[in-house]
Length: 466
Image 1 (cartoon, rainbow, N blue to C red):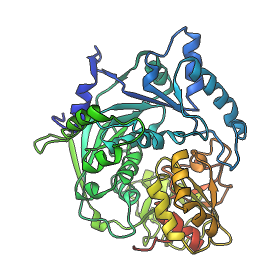
Image 2 (tube, rainbow, N blue to C red):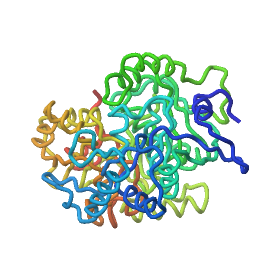
Image 3 (cartoon, helix red, strand yellow):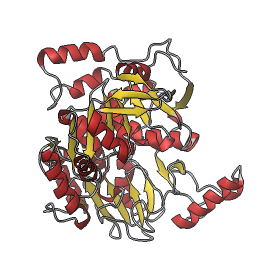
Image 4 (cartoon, one colour):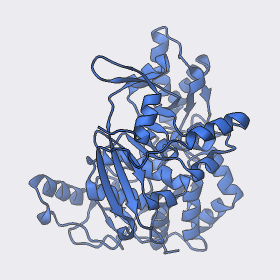
């Protein structure tokens, strides 16, 4: 069992009780609620005659089911209209703060939490979404919960959870130009597999992680769930503190000084004991792109599609054969130069301001290939406004991209925004499962820079080494 790690410290701070079956009852500091969960869970609470225990610690925003069409309103998305109207009514009835559509603070739940200063080092954060591990990039203990658990947190401000083991994943060396946090985590998933961290919390460390800016750290932690872990976290440091200071809900004055003194102690000491340790040499990582229907089916941009005949087991061989059939690819084919139809830059993995800047730097002064339709969807209302203030929207528009309103959009196709059947899309999202972006859609996961370069080339292409 791990001892003395960052994870252990935060877990113990939030422990209310150890239950008879060994589960822990934990206090929740922040509960984020999105539009797919808010109305159904709040309605159920109302039917049971219960009030939200701590409405001041719950925060709601529409993101999954809303349209990202320019000029949208609450009813533009037929799927999301009822969810949004009920979310507004029931959140108001329970005194939950709602960051409403196209208002300051609104956007994708895992973008706005850090951006607003609600997600802080040492806090315990939950949301009815598996990518809640994103917030661990700030040194928080953050994880996704199920629908019934959302209701439990609303009613009690606690969560019942089995304590995981702790895995330390160190990234050594330096990243090459044109390689980003998205490439780091995709490479790790490809190397170790989607079940490698099942039952673990991951603490990321090493020189390459320390060199990442905060928004890249959020991307790294975002895909922890794709490696099997509910939790992913990075010890906070001077970059974290500088990034948080002055944000809307961050501590101020004396409260800031006290918080900072505490946060500076949040780290795993050299003598900490981990249940498992893994290492990766970052100098061996090139720009990554998935070729199949699982995040672990990923290769370097200069790699070739695997041959099923070389698979170590019949099950792996069948998985590769099925993925190749769905994706319309053949064994031994170079991934670079594969013709594409769509590009999607957005999602809770890669729709922050630094992501948009990286993509804009690639496309500036160029044009999207005539046969490609490309979208950029900022992760939040405030990110969109800042990007527009910097002129990034115009860079994308001049290049032939659609500049969309904030939301989850084409990441999960819950709002009617889909990739056409059989069409091939380079996407900065986090999942490439069969049908994830729409029935028959073929998804290639990549960084914003690689997605942007592919949009210009009209085929899967590496970003320039800057």
